[in-house]
Amino acid sequence: MANEPAILLNRLVLWLLPVVFVGAAGVAALSAARAAQAESKLDARLQQIIAIYNLRPLQIRQYSADPEMRLGQALFFDPVVSGNRDVSCSSCHLLSYGLTDGLPRSIGVGGVGFGPGRHLSHGLSIHPRRSLDLWNRDNNAVSSFFWDGHVEVLDSRKRIFRSPMGTALPLGFQNAMAVQSVVPLTVPDEMLGTYRSYSSPALPEPHRNQINDLVTQHSYPSIASMMQSVYQRLLKRLLGLDAKPYPWQNKYRQMFAEAYPQKRMSQISIVDIGNAIAHFEEMGFAANAAPWDDYLGGDTSAISREAKEGAILFYGRARCAVCHAGPMFSDFQYHSVGIFSKITVNGKLVNDYGRWMVTGNERDRYRFRTPPLRNVTGRPLLFHDGSSSSLAQAILRHVNPLARAGGYMPDGSFAMDRGQIESVSPLLTEKLALTDDDVEALIAFLGTLASQSRDKSQIIPQRVPSGLSFIR
Image (cartoon, rainbow, N blue to C red):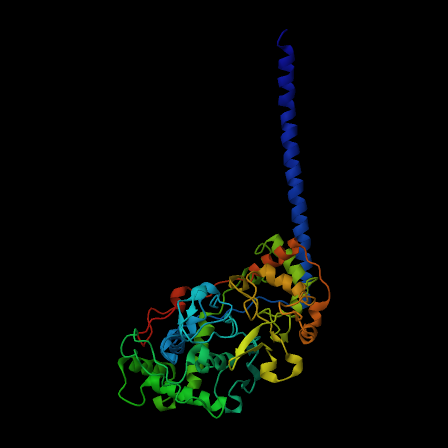
């Protein structure tokens, strides 16, 4: 038969097809089984790490829009608390930039625009460091604020805090975050402004062309006396204590009365302002559970295989958890990681000595506080001077902090002097090799620490009592 070979061939193909399909399915099943086995090993290794480090999911604070929170929200967003009524706390802490401002050096008073496009008007100063984020700062693990820790907890039980006011700091602040929240109000290049400066003529009445009544002289006998004066005059401005109050001041009187019903208006102090702002930050910027917290809670599918590999690196060979420890991923201690920059002090350009500028201890030169890592993937710039624009770059700078030690500056001087070289933490000077895959795995793990807090409508008010516009 002429067609017999073709018929036999077709029968052979039909007979082999199930074998081919079964073979392909078997390979896929085997591959899936191996992948599951590999991931199971990762989970087992992570369980050991979780036990060793006693890792637990982050405790989440319940949201409560009580009167104190509403008062703190108004004070956080209202530019009326600044010397020239042109900046608020929200100017440097924007949700869209991870509660920073997206700038390597923050711009407060006299700034135009917002975010990375913000720039200075003529003749003013840029703040010497990058703004810090505010996520979860009510957590008990948080013991210091600012890059150099000039606000920190000294005795949590007695609520004793370090601050620029020293022993003149009033009693009654609920936590270090409350102390921190009122410090920028007294810094000229942040919110205070300068003596005999005026608010913009473009502001609405009664705020336009107003002299900066928070600063009453060119200089003060001490930092503490200056801060005390600013705080007293701010209360007069907010509450209209010297004359018949404006409607917006009556609104603030009402909000203070609702937040602190046990106090008369004459008893309201800067402590109440600080506590209210801190309470708002507790409510508004307490993040919800991140994928990593879900994993710690027992959901092994909450994070990817790459993120699990990154977590093992983070707590193991890469040694990240030595400093980035605890529920906030910071030891809140001070280290030099080979990042050196200059700042302007009294009109002169000098090295930024970090912690030394607070303690005067020579060992603290070039040391800065370990930044917490929750929501770090939302920050466009990293380090105290904003000198890294990606997590990959930041990780690699930790791997080789002495990379510039053998180089020279254009003027022939060493790129790193002896003091800078010796300041670098010994934790980082031991050679560590990370592959590109390692770096990507670490970044994947850091991504599991991200979570938004509240809905924007719960954080950002529609308006503020003064009627001034603010950066959202």
